[in-house]
Length: 521
Image (cartoon, rainbow, N blue to C red; front, side):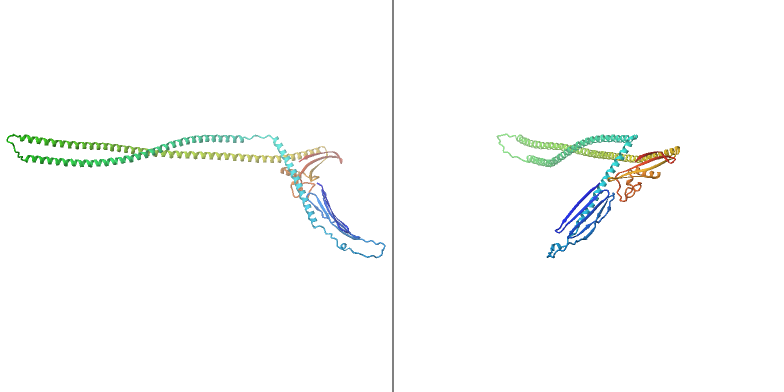
């Protein structure tokens, strides 16, 4: 890359012109910067310029700067003229300001650093492009080699596919079991809901029965109280009947005694004949009839009342017995419902436990399946990584094999040449290594002979690493390359190494034949 930069500055005063010029050049051979300032006053002259600073960059460029100072004074004598009045212009006596702008050096330094940074960036960009081209060529070569090779298909994919198919089959079976368990769970939930509804109905019936039992108990209590009251009334009426009967008998006895002990004096009409016995008998009969009727009425009334009370007591007793029977039936029903409720609760608890166990089994099965799938994925990933590692090792082995094949071919050529030389005559074999490297726009080519050990070490190390020898060694292009070195430490962006085998046959000091063979890296 070649660049030129020229700038000039001119400063004028009232007495004499002054100029300042600068010129910089950057190219393969270096750069040069110079500054000059000239000024003149009257018959004198002085100059400034010509200092030089030379620097070299890391990629073979150099720059120089010059600065010098020179001064002179000259005068000439002419024919004398008459003395005239001298007028002095004070403005001309003022010293000239010949100072250099202090920012110029900073600007120059900044420009220099900017040019260096741009050149470095450009060189690194070229280096990167060439490195990527080399990598691309190397990958293309490896790809062609791998395509040309016959590889045996591994059966690990079939094994993994069979294992994955088995796991998928197990997963499907687990899914079917899960669906069946979900259906059973749904049915069990329906049964639980039915039993729950029945349980609620039985609870409602029990509540109604308890309410009926309370009402019936109240009725029984009322009937019992009525019975007690009626029994008390019956006893009081019986006592009253006995009391009235005793009173009636006493009155009857008194009446009979009175009738028996009473003497009736009747004035009789002599003219009439009265039958007193008949009259007494008639009165007695009347009273007896009245007493009998009263007794019969009282007995019939008391008997009716007694029968009514017995009927009521029988009815209330039957009601009480029926109530007791109903209470016993309700008690048995309550006990039966309680036992059924307990059994339903036990079934519900068992079903809930079975449902929870089924859910846990399903969750464990799903977790197990997920864990197995994860393990299979990890195993597949490890297998892929192992396969990639084996492919890399295989590529490395192929690189080493290719380097060894080239070395073996080189030795074979050398041995064949040596055998031909020994068989036919004296032959000189010259083996040289040609290295071609380019820097920016310059190419350096060198040939140098080297022994076979150097060829082996350089060629094998350069090929196995995948890079050219310009990236190995210390600073610069690497000390292992013969015929070219650099001390400023920036590697090339492209390197090409050729091994040239020259076979020279001489006879009687004359060259009979000469042949060469180039082995490209």
